[in-house]
Image 1 (cartoon, one colour):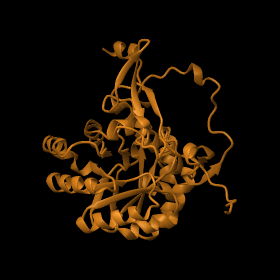
Image 2 (tube, helix red, strand yellow; image 1 turned 30 degrees about the horizontal axis):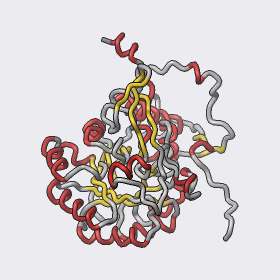
Image 3 (cartoon, helix red, strand yellow; image 1 turned 180 degrees about the vertical axis):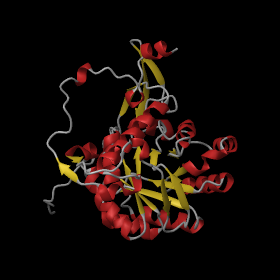
Image 4 (cartoon, helix red, strand yellow; image 1 turned 45 degrees about the horizontal axis):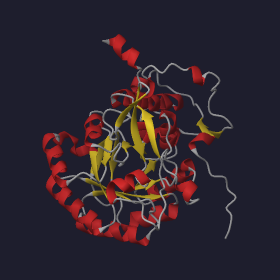
Length: 364
């Protein structure tokens, strides 16, 4: 046993320091990035924000909405092959902004092969909670051998050494994050994790040295956190909770005391395990929450709020493009993020995608 004494930081521990800027307006900022990948030799251009591959966010409906903004959706792995074929046939324009998700089992591999071959998907998201397993690296090698020209996302890990291991095994993009998600309980159940900002900084440094990319996966609660993730070196930001509760999200819509909510849960929760395998196995614990998120209507409002916040961060540090935000970012450690004295009196009118029923009626 040993203790590392260096302090590790989460998004809540820092703010971005403003810097001199020649930008006159947020409209001057470009959020589109153009990336090339170490193994696949593909190039991709778009806005590098990803809806997480949870069945309550990584839906085909979400993909249709986000692709209009050139944003990505990692589709959850529980759609059938026939459902994939139908969606791609009807929505071929989404192919540049979609990833097929897979685990490590033989059945997952066979299904992924069929989807990629029949739908011509160009990106695979290999996803397990613990990316430190030797079996996971073997899975990446297997998928890379099968698909030498497919871009592979893989994770999750939180340290530079394993980031390097997975890139050398054949991954192009590494998913970074253990435990920061809003419905993840791994840190409570297992006591394992890593503060997300420091994890992104360290994994991005390791990945970029090898020509790889990283996704900051989890921990973002607002557009400011997304900006911090990009500032820390993330090439992509993946979010679940920020995309939950919308018309395009999965989860049951319920009405309680006249207010509407949508179900949102972690994919290691008891809810997810009972849904897909019938029960929580007796050798493991549930590592996810099940909650109800206030219904927020169309995701378009949330997307515009996200993009506007990130553009604003770029103007504050003088970065005309999202790709240069990291080079212009200086973090300062802070004891407090915001003044919350009147938070409980806030009237939320369209911010973060939510509109009250009365405000909707008034617009008709």
